[in-house]
Image (cartoon, rainbow, N blue to C red; front, side, top):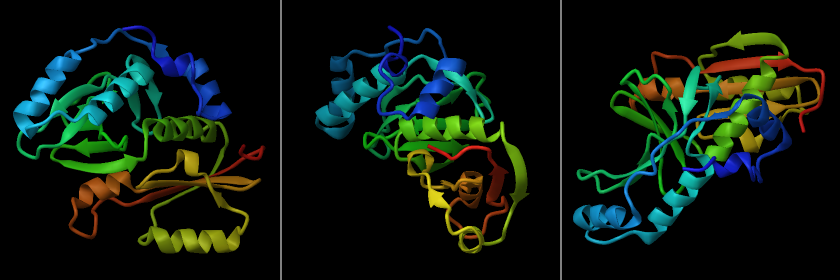
Length: 229
């Protein structure tokens, strides 16, 4: 396949994410996988019909991201974007498996995208939605990279992350959400002095839908020298 389109036409990514990809991303060769007709045959076999919308979304995501690789601070590993079209015969769900994979897979962690473009991360048999799109995930990685160049003020594991955030925003009322880099279990806030990241993905995966998690939600705060744009 040709270079991922995101390196040629990165819009609507923000300036920080574009700069991050320019400095740190590489391209590796990946296979295009089954043809459109082969994907349709699989869907008809499992679903009884062909979901043309899902196939169109898959091809668009494949063209935009396939072959992209860089070190992800969020995943704490070198990752490769290599979406593959699959239909689960048990659930009847279409998924773009391997959309975000460790370059050296451990057999436990997974990353895939649904046809609605949500990014799901998993560990063993547990999966959870993490970001609304791959662009949100990229923005998060770029912001994490930027944050780690700043001065770390604190790393906390509060028993109630929501209450902790409420108290934090009461102390720093100018904190505003950074929606472009936030997701379902990961949130960013910023003002002119600090960056705050609340990461509850590992806690959500460890809880496996059973309430309290043995893994805490992590809140990290950095002091910055520039306003976030």
